[in-house]
Length: 392
Length: 241
Image 1 (cartoon, rainbow over the protein chains, first blue to last red):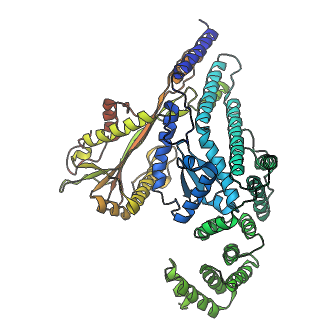
Image 2 (image 1 turned 90 degrees about the horizontal axis):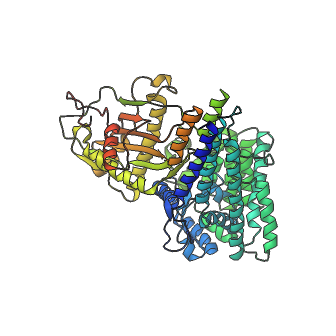
Image 3 (image 1 turned 135 degrees about the horizontal axis):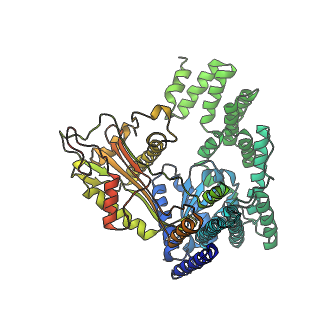
């Protein structure tokens, strides 16, 4: 038997193995139907793995426990999926200042706080939740697993077989590129599936596209503040799991218009109300990223021209943290504007007091910090602040 | 050269880490002057199947069996010669968060030990000798709730080579003369003093034996995980050997 015969023989054996796997029952029916349990070895394996992760996540300190915010996000999901389907999904709000959400094959959904900071209203939130739910409903994790497994196996066999020739070649990049192309198709499917849910639930459909439009603007603002070139239009390359933002923005707007833009519900008031209790934490985490351009862009977008006390306070914090050139005086001014509005968080007095210790008036700095401690007696940095306030 | 490189890239053929190592905090031995209770934290167990191309598919039945069998085997192995080995109970509310915190902290500390202390290659110059790792005395809050002197952590990660992987291995070795590994069996165990939080012992092996899917194999694995377990003070080596 020469080497080629050996190769062909092995490839035939490979198919034999693939056929042995075909005996596994094929998952059918909707995973979001009541009483659904995973079917077949692959789906059971994926669910079990996700359950183990969920077990850890449940007791993680990173999970935001605010009852109102959690109930609200769930309410939005149920509004687009219907009660039966959303009962199969567990949502975890995870404290991480990144623009992302994630769906696991067993119905665990993670929504990161950086996403809640970036979506401007309920319709935009619903667009993202709909996208994630579509991944679950269509078993994207399972088909991606199979696709990647096949891709890697073909690459391994062909690469090894190429060792018999005088031109050995690593086939993995080609096959992985094909897998990632498939992954991007799944994302497009989830985008459009989510858009359909958004539309059917009566939300304004342009919301799905807006998220990506602003994500691109945020990248510009980030790059501008850093004095570097924005990469928002640079090709992501073949090994990227998601389509480019520019593409998503465009097809979502096109499809939204095709579906109809007669519905106008955006749920802005409900969204702001539900997020208010956790909002200070969201913005604080964002400011700590030391990403001045993106943070300032986000704040301006949230304000939409109406700078509330909270937003002014957040912007002041941003300037105080950077503290370059006229930043401290800008911060001082913004804190004063926040306080003048009457709806400023207690932190505005803390920020103003600390800024004043550096910009000049020590007497006012002390009295402002005293005022802060009166407004927030349980401040975790009370000992330090009262030392400053008492002039020690 | 090009051939070997192409193969290595495509097959994610891990460099052979035929390494097994243990470390004990200097001067530590299991106390003999008082009864010792060891709390076993829920073992982190992953068992899956490795495809021809090396991708691991998790297997639900294998994983849950292995977790159960390994847990039983660790208790039966009487680490350190103590018979008082109990499982960390499930906790509720804030206690559950505390437990999760320390479970995660142990994972982070253990990763550091494995990467920068135990194995050659990426050792930190200041960590080549000595063994100064701790989860901090706060861990005693857990011990206070449940009662226990030492916490035993077990982590295993197994991927059994599928038929396709084994065929590829045979073909690669026979026809092409290239080595392809089949299966991966990684595990480590660590012991924490629940009063001080100090990590007193760790044992890791990147090529473990024992098929964790079966009772006999799990017993063998438990034995390997508990190899070099700290001996009782002034006594002979621990009963686990």
